[in-house]
Image (tube, rainbow, N blue to C red; front, side, top):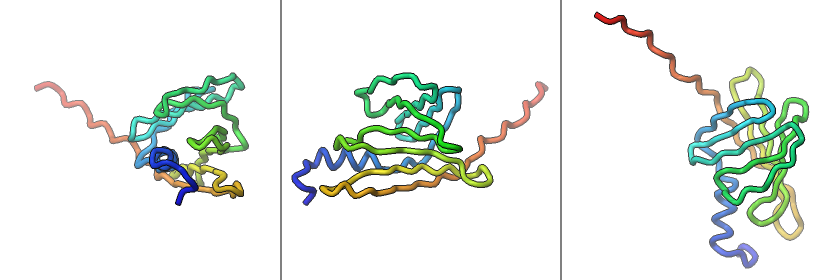
Length: 132
């Protein structure tokens, strides 16, 4: 079961692919920050700089690129295998799709995991109440 993998390794992998309940995306060219509700932050740099690998699993920096309208980054999963993570806005600008391409098992079978997030508009600010 799990090919001799420890419970700790399985748990790290599960956390790696676990979807967020909510994502916040901020674009500050050439940096795109994606944060989730578990206090994880991914910073994607699209200007070709060499990014240092962080030891903090909750704050990761990635060298990324635009492939047409998709933001794409590559890295290594907790098992040390290469993966690709991408984000793209779907038709109507009301949804964001996150796709993770992994290689699993001894045969390095490619697996695609997709999560779709609906846009939640920020709450409307109530008009200021004039002093009485």
